[in-house]
Image 1 (cartoon, rainbow, N blue to C red):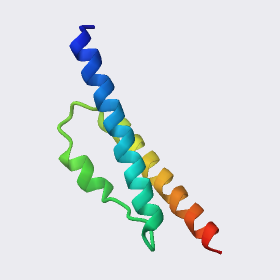
Image 2 (image 1 turned 45 degrees about the vertical axis):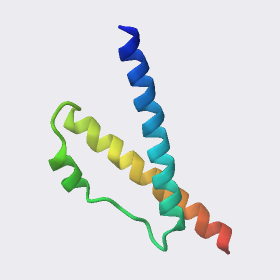
Image 3 (image 1 turned 45 degrees about the horizontal axis):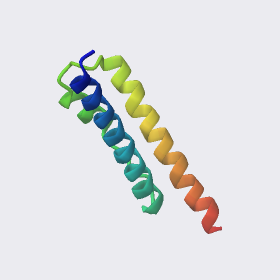
Length: 77
């Protein structure tokens, strides 16, 4: 793999991490979970990422944000 491709992939991985953490923070601060419309997101996909795996990734993101929101609610008690 060419160094510029490796660097770009590393940049994208860090960006994904930052976005996931931001989404979890917002879900935790919201009164309920801010669930995304899974079917809408899947419809917007270009097909470069396999649809079945994308569905799994988005479900895992939603699950993680729901868990983060649940921790906030437990801490508020």
